[in-house]
Image (cartoon, rainbow, N blue to C red; front, side):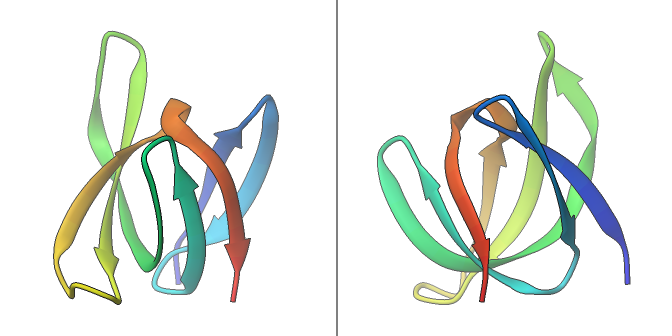
Length: 72
């Protein structure tokens, strides 16, 4: 099981890959599984690859857009 550090509102949170989380971003909230941290950044922004429960689709989130994240 992989672990990642995510910066959420100036706080570093350690999360576990392949675990389910409630994730709130600027324009939506969902339950999903963070699969991996992307191997690139764009202009200093860090991306994560997730799978949403609700839509069962792949989604990319950007670390600086995360407002809240809680393990379920």
